[in-house]
Length: 289
Image 1 (tube, rainbow, N blue to C red):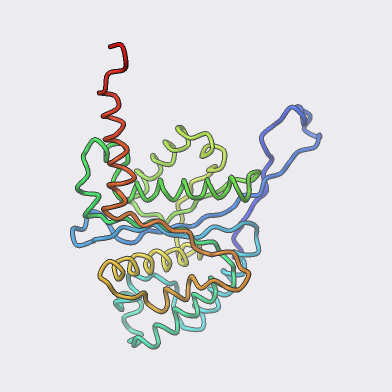
Image 2 (cartoon, rainbow, N blue to C red; image 1 turned 30 degrees about the vertical axis):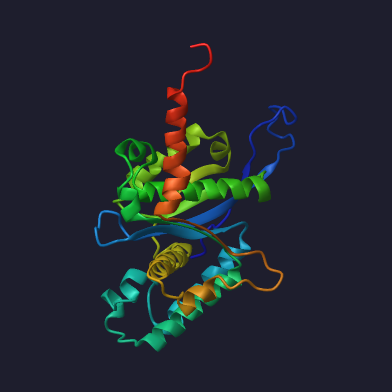
């Protein structure tokens, strides 16, 4: 089944078009973004939470990804790619008994499909231990680590749209996770309510089954590898080869991954310090008082 990866919709009515239904209209292209999570904040053993995924405009990138991805699944005899089960040989992967060289070769095939499609990657990771230490009055506003990462991802997309596609808007797709979806949707609405730019560019929030929506499987791979890479770097190890392969920048090609990593020092400098300074400024009496 061919999925409708893009759709053209009429732009908001302007004075130039009037109310004539047969008059000229501008049409916007919906840019699709697919994201997934890696690491749950509720698990005390998780040091890092990460949200990552891909953005692309038009039909061609997603069709390239879908066609190649399905062929890879068929070639290797698996129904989908789910890293949480694929790496430790769980569920359908248990019977395969693949060693690491075989798994690595399969992952390289999938990474090749991502690179061939020319997708733009986005990722945000956060040190959960550091986030747990910040005052409750801040977490009530910013949310938990997952919600914070989600808000940062949305901001990154809005900023990219303002520069590269100011006349278009985005449809955001996430995995249908019952633990995250309700709070995430509420935050999506809240971001739109508070930010006029977000309201303009973030027009659709969708949850989907990654077994059907193949781009979500690619997002799962990116989120998994991003989180593992952060953990390795925090432990003083080098990046894994397959991670480097995902983000290899081709000659004359736009960089394909935009990311943020929030460690304890970043949280202190960019969140806690400005809040303290603002509070101190309110307590200092002005001249004449």
